[in-house]
Each structure stands twice: as C-alpha cells, then as structure tokens.
Amino acid sequence: MKKITSADPIRAGFRAIVDVYVAPFLQANGFSRRSSGVFFRESGDDFWRVACDLRKARGVNLGWATVSVCVGFRSLIDFLWPSEAFNWAILDRKRPCIMAANLGHLRPDGQYHEWRIEPGLNTELISMEIINDLRMYGFQYFEEFGALPKAVEAWEEGTRFNLGDHAYLYLAGAYCLMGNSQLARNLFEERIRELENQYKQIPNPSFKREIRTTKILREFLEAKQKESTNDRRDDG
Image (tube, rainbow, N blue to C red; front, side, top):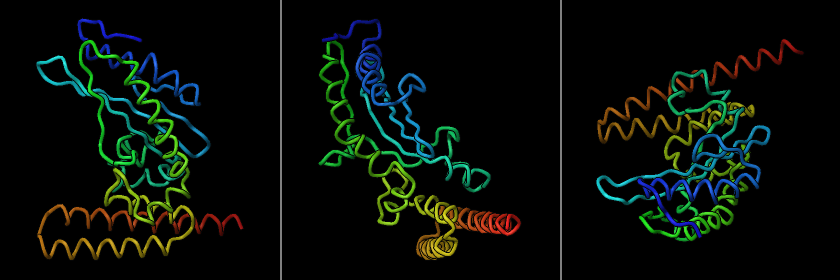
C-alpha cells in the first residue's frame, strides 16, 4: 500500500497511480509509454491509446484523475490529412486518436467518472479500480472498435462516443478509402440537407460554417477518389 507523501500530495498521488500501478499493467499488455500519462499500442493500421489525466482544484489539496481510451487508424488519417477542412481534428498523425471515451462511459451505468485524489488517500485502492475498469471495459472497447471495419460498422449504427456529429466525416472518408464513393456522396448530401434545414430554423453561423466545411471535404474526397481511380487505370 503506497501513501501520498509530497509537498504536492495531489500530483504525487496521481504519479503513484500511473507510475507504480497503471504503467506496469499497460506495458505488460503491449502498450508503450508516450508521455507521463499517455500509452499507445500499435498493430498494423490500428492505434489504441490510454490517457491518464489529472485535474487539480484551485487553492486546496484536492484533485481528480480521469482515464480515457481511444482508437485511431493510420490509413484513414493519412487519407484525410491533406484536407484543409479536416486537419483541425487531427492532433497526432503518427499516433492517431479518432474516437475516444471516458472509462466511466463504458461502465454499465454509462456515467462520466473521475477518481478523487486527496492527501492520505490509499492510491493502491484507486489504482486497482482503474486497472479493473481497463481490463473489463477499456480492453473490450479496443476489441469492439479497434479496427477500421469495426469502427465503420459502429459509426453506421450510430455509436460515436466523443465524435458526435463529426462521425459522418470520418465515415465518409472511410467509405472513400474502401472504394465506396457513392456511399460517401450520399452521406454528404444527407448531412448538408440536415444542416441547411437547421440553419433555416435557427440561423446559427456555426451551421453555415459546417455546411461550408462539409462541401469542402466532399470536393476533396471526390478529387481523391478520382485520383485513386486514375492511378489504378495507369497501373493497368
């Protein structure tokens, strides 16, 4: 059992959770440490990420630890990267994170969850709970959504987690990448109609901006698809 002892007991407690318990567990399961609280596992096209973060309260010795999991796909990011309409969403091309979820959202109650950290807290107890949640829910998340075909199926069925309405952008990109340009075109047209109808009801400038972004990305993906078709003809 490791107690918190430091001039900054909250940060020390968080570091003990990550360094002493979570990091060895993840590394034993094939993850590499990217930074203090971020771990990646790579398998071909697929990237799995676990991120441990600390949120500290101001003026008091109190904080909260959060853990999230994320899946990303190099082929999809490489395909979308050149688009000016899309690069806002891509933070790390080499280690892509596309769809993330707080561990609490994966629990049976589906509620966002943080672990409270305060001086004198038993960090081993929190660590074992985090590890158990990773084993039961985090790794299941990777199995269910951690390959592009599985993610595409989830997006088609409406499973989006943090992506929200932007899921259709990734889905359209995946359709084009897999050669289903007509499905991508249909998706764009449907989304543009939705946004235009929303703008008519509520003239919010954000709807206008997204309509413009969607049209730019549609044109970009259509050009990419034509380029890919021409390359195949040249090879033939």
